[in-house]
Length: 505
Image (cartoon, one colour):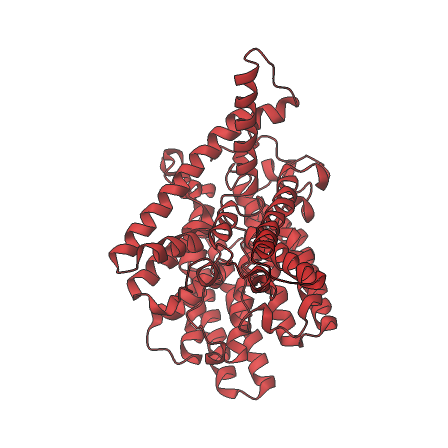
């Protein structure tokens, strides 16, 4: 085990991917789909052999910069590892273009959830299970690497709380993160987080089965919820047999994407703050309280103005549809409630998809599977704006709330503003590239936000008419796949790779 743990990080990820291919192989065997079972079995064998050969070739490799090696391995994991994961998918789905299979795996592994298959019947159940499983593994990879790789380097949102520069390391981390070998950090945090991640998935799976879903649909939705990938073997949540009970159970588990304190309190730093004192969780609750309420009031006033008669039950269902969908897109999951369209039926007024675009841009918590700008950065900008308004009224006032709050309002807000500008420029650049491939302006904007925020289902909901990924050119698919990798890694991590200290001999 020590020799295995000493292998390069990317080789270990290849081994995990090869072992994971046995799951759809056994599932297809149980369903009697022997062709799909053989394809995934052969894929597991070939991928395992390739992993062993690369592991033997690199077992004595010692990187000059461990931080650079880990960041490059993480970038390769989201960009190159899907090439291996797409091989059995390409054969089982009988595709003619390998780019499509790679796009599916990049979308799944980055927990984006975008798919080229608008009709779910085009893929057999084992392929749907493979997509959900790859997304689930990608979510666990984000959990582990955010704490073991990005946090010690002061990246991934941790730079907002820290006084050090992004990529320079965090002094407030615990002893394990500061002193332990990076390989040891990965092993320790993986062993600590794996039971939590698997246990939460198991509980959600059991809950969805009890709510009325089949075991297959329940496990796919459970893995997609914990990883916030939004992958479903059905046409949507409205087709799930569990109905309102299933949505209520998923709603509870989506809170784990709002703050890392819900599952890893004390792992990334020495702080022991309670969840109700976490600024990310508090900001998320404010958004959940205001956005669905404003949406409901908008539809309620429209219904009263148009003399639309609706009962109390219709009003409650409409409010629930807004509440569930707002939380789903805030965590960049992308599940749409079956009552979301019922809100429009309640008032005969369409709900603007731009609201969902804004929620996806905000995103979830730091060191969670959610994408977007992240709640902590938005909180830092909001506190900085509040302090500036206070200084306009009282120029000689002194801002209190402790050293950490002052650091978030000053250095944290400064770094958050830089990240927000880089994020906005990235959206503009992706929109420009998509427009050059022939995609219309509005569709390019929605697709760019969906890919960069890792919220694939946003394309079907936010635009005036649903944008189908299968209808865009292959060049646009490649651009979106690379944008998903960029959105998952965040631009600051890519910039940190350009640090001269990483490459200096």
